[in-house]
Image (cartoon, rainbow, N blue to C red):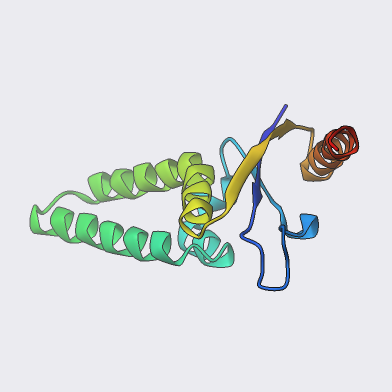
Length: 133
């Protein structure tokens, strides 16, 4: 069953605490779309610095393999391994970006999908809020 980490953004100027509807739920595990179309996935999730790092690293790998006159199969394998790495590390890259932007990690929750994970998290969160003075 998937695990999600829950992140709260920094409060806006008119807020004392972050609004719960702005919380982000990041699923752990392999992200197929990040594997298949990494640059697009990074841009859709507004991971600008990670996108720049990806483009530079992928470009350097490609140039290096070309200078070494690596066969096409080796170039394909290198591209596949980079895509596989991005697919597995996509949640970590996303969490790193959120932390860099000042988001706090509130915890984690388990659920079959994001909607169930949100329901479980907010249900438990409401119980804790009712208990505290």
